[in-house]
Length: 154
Image (cartoon, rainbow, N blue to C red; front, top):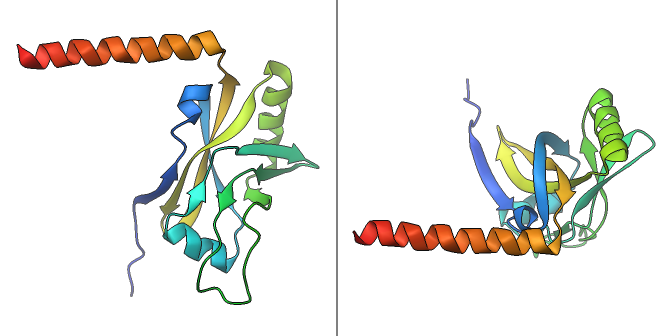
């Protein structure tokens, strides 16, 4: 028998999400992709910059995520900015939709990774930060970095 690959291999992470949003709750979901999209993801060619999740008709769709075209795909290319369907249970989608409507939250992608040979996406329920909150976070990081540097010198 052939052993299945185990573990997680991160393809890409949305590092700006922590800067623009306060991340509250994390959810893992599958994603429907074409063959050329999978090949492109293996090369790590993905951009999360304007990514978000839209829920309509009881289904969740990933919008604004750019997966570059695969050079060797030939005639079977994919559209880089198309909406991709997320694979989640109906009750998960319903609970996320109710949280998003009641609390004014949004659902943003934070990580894309391989898990047991399948591509998964980590989503986060997020609350947008104000500009002054972002500035305060940057100041706090700078203070922490300076104190850490001083501690290492001593």
